[in-house]
Length: 150
Image (cartoon, rainbow, N blue to C red):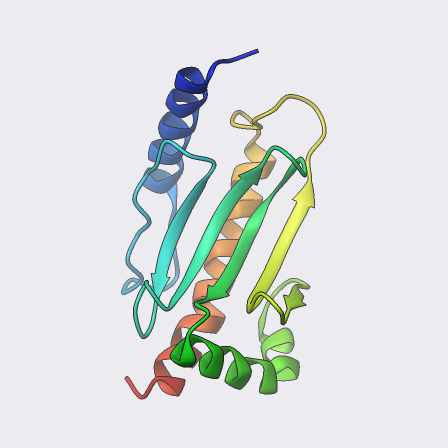
């Protein structure tokens, strides 16, 4: 198997390529920075330290996907609660089903991956992640901005 340094190179190369090819409907959304890890982060309003979308590869679970996360502090908890109150409308607006993890203040979309790991040469994975990020940004970014009074 690969050692830690090789893993880091593989992920960094993947994210650079993925981010360069990612086209979002929302031109105002700041792009994630490539990392040498299995995940990247897209900041959302009111700030990336309170709300963000993580795009991830989970080797342990053999899953790829995205989650919206709100920080465990008053502003984050309040915003998550406000989103949860709009859950039905949010689920209509999102073009795919999601899971709500209320304890961790997360909204998640992920899928299992079979075959080689990490699935960095799988066009279906690329398309799945891009579709998920775009859907999350389209639906959550304007809502969070409104809820945060921005």
